[in-house]
Image 1 (cartoon, rainbow, N blue to C red):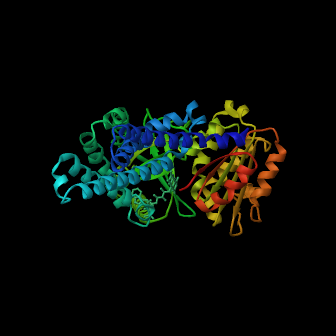
Image 2 (image 1 turned 135 degrees about the horizontal axis):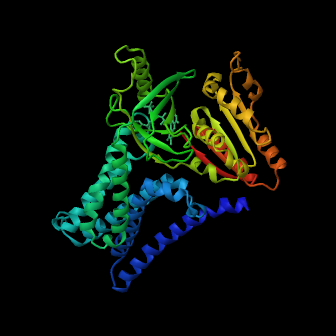
Image 3 (image 1 turned 90 degrees about the vertical axis):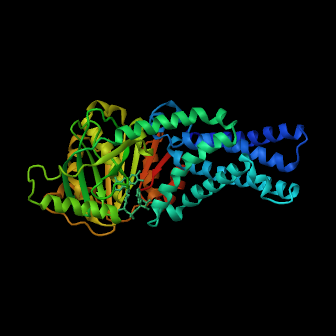
Length: 455
Ligand SMILES: Cc1cc2nc3c(=O)[nH]c(=O)nc-3n(C[C@H](O)[C@H](O)[C@H](O)COP(=O)(O)OP(=O)(O)OC[C@H]3O[C@@H](n4cnc5c(N)ncnc54)[C@H](O)[C@@H]3O)c2cc1C
């Protein structure tokens, strides 16, 4: 049954491929019947595929809409967690079809006109040229080489070119309006909603540094801020940079009325600057009562992540690497605060692996509390670090949670399966891509559902 669930996720992709094929073939067939040459068939067929995908490219990034849909019945049929991966596929298709469309017309003009300049006096042709230049910039700077490796700004700002691209496309090909008007409206409203909520500054209530270079920021929760465990948001701290918005999981439980928290690991330039700013502010004597008042924080969220569906799963196996624990802490805190939900969870298995033992410190008290509240039959926690654990008098309660040998994932997951042969499990993984590559085939082999999130 679960294997079927994993396979069912392919159906939308097959429908998508068929829809593209159909758009191409039906349009080309229409022109074929008008006795148009091969270049026109190729150009018109690819244009039809561009219309469809330009509408999809907007819908896949309507984050508020996708977040809402993820919690509904549609998520059983569509792999909504993969909306960004799908957005990338759609982007590649648009770029490839733009090349086919332009290439076909260029060859046709080369064969029909004495000079290539002549056809470019017409609006439809020079606007087409501008469109292909725009999409090339968008596509090129969206490649991993720009999205990562300190060149994020190229990706970020070039993506705004989608606005002139879409606007110009309406004039270049008026038929585009049939496909794109509604998605444009949905995307516009989605952006407007996000823009409105991200303009309200949040007050920092506290900032605490934990061992393992982890900063816990508690922000005052606005009264109308609703979220689910596993959701994340983009944080902007204008004192550091007005342009940078970095994603962080909300590590607090939605049941906590007064604050929302994030746990931020020092990683690169921006996170190091945040750590430093909070440390210097807490030690400055200017305003000891409310030291962080002069540091407004903006939050674009909540945004649904793969882990946001944890509450809907029957039994869960949570696997975290490093700071990837944050969505699971939000989930476990929620379980702890909402006793009535317990009966719906038969089993929660948590595995947390980390290079350093320090990284666990901020959670040890919480785990101890959690385990005193719950029967071990209901929650199992295993922690594993590459370095030996040292226990102070404060955290001795957590000692039995530590595993002193590397975790054999296949053995662990097989054991769970044999203990609960009839139960449905979803494995949620959060952490770097490397471990996910090991886990995914094992999870699928055992017939569990797999949901992953990479930080
Ligand atoms: C959904 C999600 C949830 C996350 N949750 C957490 C969490 O709970 N705790 C935690 O510690 N980390 C979390 N992360 C990781 C965190 O977002 C990064 O560690 C942080 O952005 C690193 O920023 P940096 O500048 O310090 O590092 P850098 O090495 O300078 O940048 C690292 C990456 O940040 C991105 N980036 C660079 N510039 C910008 C910019 N201007 N705007 C936006 N992104 C930019 C790029 O992709 C770059 O590869 C999460 C990431 C994701 C995707």
